[in-house]
Length: 134
Image (cartoon, rainbow, N blue to C red; front, side, top):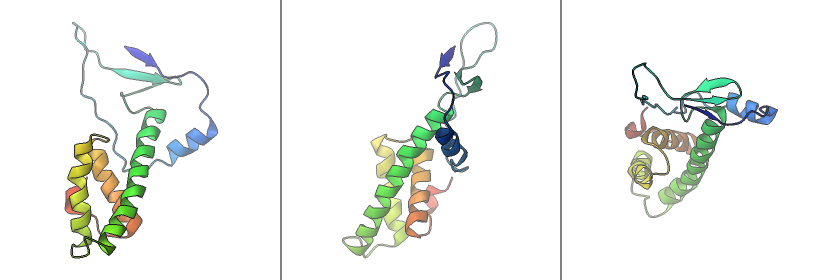
């Protein structure tokens, strides 16, 4: 089944953003199949190209924008925590305690949550916690 996501030309700003998408940003892995006698798999068509579900440029950009926004928010929260009520904790411990909470929200996938924690560590200049390793 092909889902048309849009046939209008991709604008230059979207193309530039997609090209700048971090290489370590997780891509969804969809291991689905369609029933029938012949082997089939799901793909989405976007501007004449086929992508795994969730991996077209607009879909990845939307997910990355959401994750980057979360990382920006968590960087502020992490610095405030270190300066305040969690001053007794190490920087790694502070980031470590946010990871399961972020996963539990369901806002992002587990690989994306780990990427958010790595990005947060980068933004605040802290070491990446082992739990956020790819």
